[in-house]
Length: 469
Ligand code: GDP
Ligand code: GDP
Image (cartoon, rainbow, N blue to C red; front, side, top):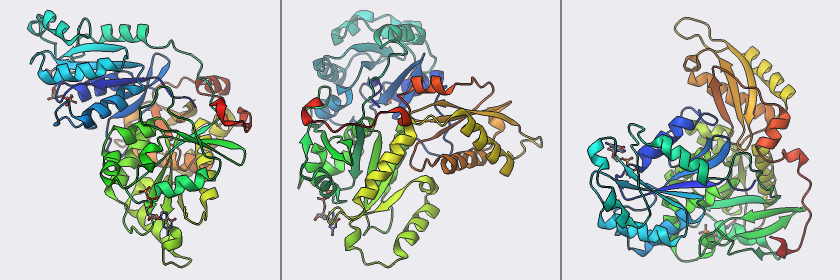
């Protein structure tokens, strides 16, 4: 997969970033959607806009808005956030007018050289649209009045999107490299694993065009396949525990997730409980539509017997239902034990993300699942689900046709998802389930075009010298 073009929403606190984010998704989030039961950190979603597959990023909550916008930390965060953007939406509050913080932020964003649209939000009342001249002070051109709450001005915004974004159907370049991010708390064993993976054929391929100043991607080859580990700089800076902590809460982890296809989340096996920060990462990965493999690190150091692993998994999965479908591998970065297994899982998950399941297989799955367990009645009436079809790849979505989607209980959606994961061997793949009143059937050929080539059709990567990246 190559990356999707990305729209990033920036602006100081309370200008309405998350309102706009939700508004945009609400209007157009038709294709993806519907993982029930997860509290969403709505910061980052894949978004289909008129046939274009995009990422939409809300920087609110990632950039520390309480800090002075001149602080080094904020500067770096902004840089990371807008770095990859195809388009930046810069929000100001039309009612309060321009503030010092707005001006400072604008200067930083301008420095990125990205295409920026200045949006004067909260402009639903005519009197808030009068002072257009003041907004020119921002130096970001003409401001577009919008209202995230009423939707005022959004049609005009869509028109801009149409002009500024790559046209739909632009073929993405198939990248045979498997992009993965390695995340985990300080001392989880990230650097040790990276060093093991890199071994002798460490190839540093960075700084890549379109990545942050100090973001370093590294490539390695395993069993004839190329892997790219995103943002190893975040891993190699040692003895900077504060940095590591920030790595979690800020844009950097998010960017690393966004730029990868599969995340390996490392948890120290000496931890009995699943750490809270890691749950947050899990949610973000899920939200972002990326694959996940959990690595229980330092397995060599744990006092254990043959039941330890199963008991640990069982306990976690009971407490955290979303882990039921997440692959867990206990390994040692130090000795190399089960490191190959970790990579095999990454490959399986990545292929699952891109797979075209095949029309006949989907029908077979649906018949089996629907026969084994019928949807629960709603308001005393039976619920009919008539058809099922894969409608997207990367991440894959299975859409189901039913008269009234609201009548399909969450528990049943979860059941359908769990069965699909079992049927298609998709543990760790962010499979989406979607209920629709009208299903537009997509052929396998459509799907293959819609995403990348299906994994089966991707020619096996040839091992080539470093300079081809
Ligand atoms: P963020 O901090 O930039 O993400 O801002 P939020 O989206 O959380 O919005 C901050 C406040 O402004 C909330 O109380 C919103 O309801 C309000 N708000 C956001 N957009 C609009 C708008 O278009 N018009 C009005 N009147 N209020 C808005
Ligand atoms: P990071 O902060 O996540 O990059 O963690 P490091 O890779 O620096 O590891 C933190 C500490 O755990 C170091 O003292 C490592 O030597 C140790 N460590 C990492 N991986 C293993 C492992 O597989 N087995 C054992 N016994 N120790 C490990």
